[in-house]
Amino acid sequence: MPFVATEEQAAILRHAAGRHGRILAGPGTGKSATVLAWLAENHPIRARLLTFTRAATGELVQKLAERQDIVLDQPSTIHAFCISVLLQNGGVGEFPRPFRMADDWETDNIVEPTLARRLKIGRRDTDKLFTELAANWESLNPVENPAVSPAVRARFMGGWQEHRTIMGYALLSELPYALRSALHDHPDLEGIDYAVLVVDEYQDLNACDLDVLRRLAARGCAIVAAGDDDQSIYSFRKAHPQGIRSFLDDYPGAAD
Image (tube, rainbow, N blue to C red; front, side):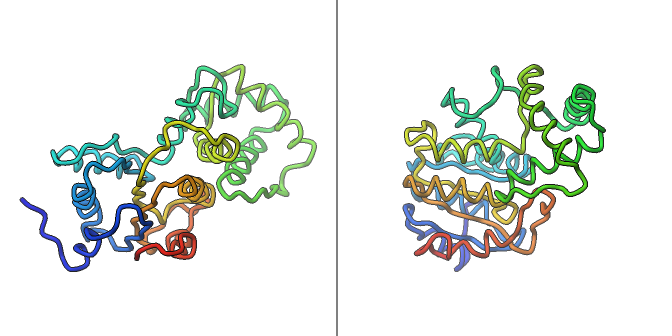
């Protein structure tokens, strides 16, 4: 069935491809279908579709497969995008080689227990310190948990890098921070030469995710943010709907 745009969707279809833009709309309003129609209107533009959850990414992959008039790189999560850029630029990111992600089960049942035993600190302290570490990456605002003693924290920070090198793992929460650092330190990164990044679920991004996008925009990439500021559910990873609410301030001249 051909895409028949509403008046609001038609305004999105007229959006200039080189301009930042925000699509603020609730679930079921056709954000994804409209974005794909817009990309078809601007074909062949070098664009990438990003979202936060794997479920939403899967939906985008399926919808894109139904469009024979659009040729794009595979949609992915923000974290998968970070991995792809870091791996394409082999020397950036302080990760063990070969690169391997620790999933939630491995982190809970292997990484944390073995690190606690190795450093002779309590498992609860280890859990608190991993949570603290992730929060500091995600918020860009280092805060120390007062329930952990400075001596235990110093032992943890000293032993964690050695432990991850021995066991060969990286943590999911550190990936956007690693790409942010790479964008700061390396002006010649490969794999980021997109004209447009369309970012769905924008309300679920945290301060680090948002700063990565701003740094990509500074290199000439237009950001199109799609989301709903009433649907943010990832506050545990420091996400906040303020990101999509302040988009027009972050990107002066953006369409709304």
